[in-house]
Image 1: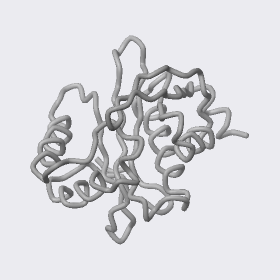
Image 2 (image 1 turned 90 degrees about the horizontal axis):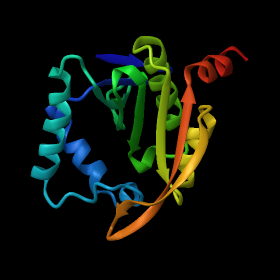
Image 3 (image 1 turned 120 degrees about the vertical axis):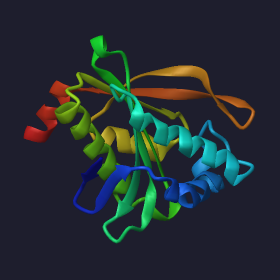
Image 4 (image 1 turned 30 degrees about the horizontal axis):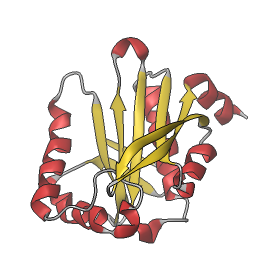
Length: 182
């Protein structure tokens, strides 16, 4: 599967993306607010990527993990959408970009594209995302795409041996289409 934005391609992950994903997960600055932690070996990353790739075989497909790259195939990061129970028509989204692409609008661009995919193609009603309270950049991205902060969960994120609070954001399909029409 492949989705496009003005500057980027979001495509299904391949095992050939392993080295780029391992580098992304090994950067201290991209791990600062991430619960995965820095992988000790590329084998640990390979297990994760294998799991992500296996989601494509599930029927119905409940998880989509995309490699994000520029049109010249330069790796930017990853973004995912995890669909909840069908009756709720909801999903959670997450993203992680290489730090050399921060502050260039790429995160906002890919989150907007995933929201469009979720509401238009997957016919979702609600999409959610969370970010550590200290992750101001991700908080700004979620606000820019029209997500509303609904609350704060206390001490829920295990990050480097400490429990951190998490902001909870959401957007409804009606909110999404209203912001796109205005």
